[in-house]
Image (cartoon, rainbow, N blue to C red):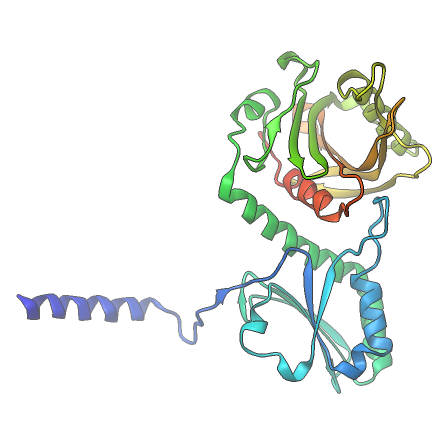
Amino acid sequence: MRYLILAAFSLLLVMSCGDKKPNQRILLDSSGKINDISVVISNDMWDGSVGETIRNVLASPIYGLPQDEPVFNINQIPTQVFSGFITQNRTILKIEMGKTPAITFKNNVYSQPQKVITVSGKTKQEVIKVLNDNTSKIIESFKNTEISAKQKQTRKSLYNAKEIKEHLGLNIEFPTAYRIGKTLATKADKFYWLKRDIPTGYVNILLYELPLKAIKKDSSIINQIVKVRDSIGQKYIAGPLEGSYMITENAYTPFHTEIILDNKPTLETKGMWEVKNAVMAGPYINYAIEDKINNRWIIAEGFAYAPSVEKRNYIFELEAIIKSIKIEK
């Protein structure tokens, strides 16, 4: 009987090995903090013009925050020590000298999930040019990787958002640390305020819908977005004092662009909010998703109140949650 079991085990082992593709590697899980980028470059280049260019690309200030905070944190790794567990970092930028000027974007080179961007050039000037010419692509590629990593973390403890799905016709993934906040809205309003307490304040997500005709895509689009969010703030987001409510801060010009979210045209607006008749303020991100199939706009806005602390990671968390939205057909 013992020999029969051994034979069966050997057969299963051979069959499992036969299933593997030739030269298939087993990759370990990647590691690293969210929004931390490993830059593989020699010390002398890091201290010179190439390093300065990399810092300008990866650590430039984020628009829409009340104080300067970098897009990414950077960890420089000397080329000669880039081996072993260090190669398992989730996001890596490598600089290679003595090669034809080029940039490559690769996934899962040393671990998974992982994004490795390699910039090469025969001279420092060529490397700098490649970096400057591809700044937006580099930032977008790393950011998408980090958004996915944050969303993966969120899925470990998901809030049951069945009610939102039933009333707004969409799926959204946010952690159980959030709760549905109290407002004057009723279920008939199809308005939701998601809230999470943090050490110095709270982070928030607003979800609601508007008729498709409520926003026209023309030259006044920013003013329309501001008008909508101010009316919502006055109606639902009361401040700490009687008669106070959230509005858009007029002294800070909102940043506006158009992206694709859930395969739909989406208006992205970033700026600052404040509370009328009270001393409260902070950053916000607003997404207006054009849902033509259902003849409506889905509005998803994240805003943070976190006085005296950095806010980048809070806004990033809100962005990752909002970008998980999937609208029911």
